[in-house]
Image: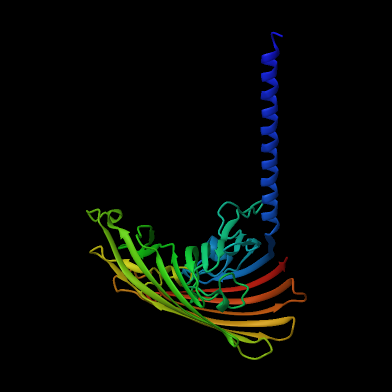
Length: 399
């Protein structure tokens, strides 16, 4: 009986351990069941499209625009020096995109998420052998109740007003931006704090981006969502700033100024046959990067190191005509202008114009085939001009 006590203790330890293990296993199973129950309430959806673009382009003042300008119309890449009589052909599928979204019921309402990527603007690939390009984030956003958090279309921009074009962005006077934000949307109002960035002309005339902002961009928008169309008016208040120590002005202080911009957007039906009219007007002294893919800078650093804001205006009007259930056409005319100070460099852009005309055929809802004529013009402060003439052919397959 010498070993009875230790043996009894061992049995007790094993029993307690088994009970704890059983309890732990039950807890894990219950946790997994809870996760499964939670996941079972989430709805998932994915989609996107495959798009092939073929561009035959001629820049009358240069051989090529460069990587971005060869893929779609970027006003600032239109050259105003030299001469060119050559046409260049480019093909790519980088606009192809994929999205994934969820909707999860919660005690506070439905939690919605949306993630979308495409392959434009990638510098990883090349056209020599594989044409392999990196995905980039377009949207990564979550919404709960009246709140939206993440990266998506800027509140200053209303996507519903965009023309139905084959070109990726379109008119030179278009207000266009996606960026990180926090947005509150009660009723037809939107109030947002969005990521700031300052783009200016330096004393030597070159453009530069600074990241010295203390305040986010403050944006307010009101949406008139009527049965007869979609309308909105938006206001952005911006701090423009830079550190003059980076300008070698002999001090380490920080210069800043404050400006505004307004946007008016509209999309209205013309007839019940599917024809519509779309338009934008963007105006202000701090438009800068919000207009025409940063076609102009928002300010200039003068000889004293102070920021001089630049009044700008841009807009477009576009008409969509539905020939039949399978055929449609779009015509878009656009212009943008900057009232630059006299101290800017002579090769600084002061005015842009563009025109788009297309014909699109959709034999089935999932397929679009089309061709588009694109014309763009740039005029500098010196009076020099340059033009882009392009034929774009596209095939887009939705899934």
